[in-house]
Length: 154
Length: 154
Image 1 (cartoon, rainbow over the protein chains, first blue to last red):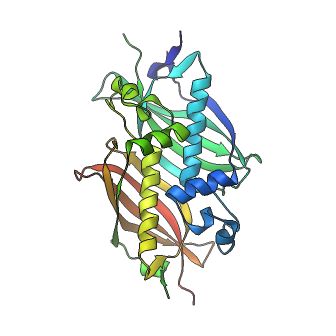
Image 2: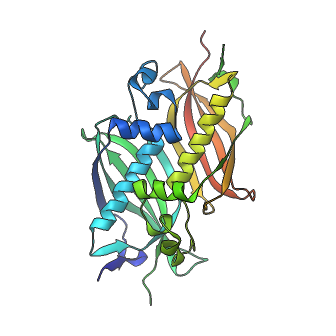
Image 3: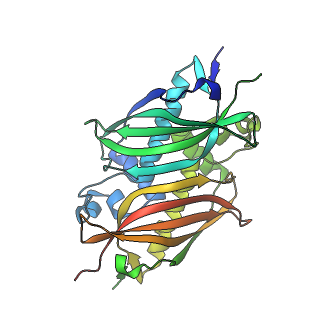
């Protein structure tokens, strides 16, 4: 039986790690071709004349890869799954360094705020500080997702 | 010859429209399968027991679709392309309504702040308020991208 991680179980300062995941040139180009076909996300040639210098992933690819790693992390943990009900939004998303072909990403997520819901007593809202690093331990992205969590059934 | 839209050309209150784009069930499931495989993004059955009720797109799919529409809008405008140099980040991203299979999305982008760069005199920073609507004119997403723009060459 898998336990659930409810709103009450999450405490300020709780830290989770996620990843790693290596992103390939083909994946960067495929995502950009479909969703963000700007020259610096499509080829080294297109990036050469910009401050990117060479191919870099779309920032929206980077955020999607963070989500992928986090969901995979929950799936691997068969003992306890978060009772997440979807995200309200994200504050302070920052792309700090380009993500390049072959980069291996990993991340941390720390609970930085929790709040009861006034309108919906069965849930609460958790804000986390998510930081994504590359294989040189450089932070490449930060963001503060704001996620609804189910409360423990009474 | 295509003109460029430089930092100096963008004024507070400038408004652009982008889209429309219709998102299919297959696209919602394909994105979620790759990047955000939570039950409510994968099937109606998986969403039935949640507040989503039926299949809804990953929020990261919705942001990626906004980017897609914006880049396609720039490509269609052969007269003038924005001299954008990539985004620093996004403030105040909020997912306001679920995006459903068959929804037709469109959006607006308004310049709400502009700032010279101290460290890099050849560029400036533009903040926009982006709002995404569905076919019922309900706002489904809002965000404030912060984007570097090249200044007009002297």
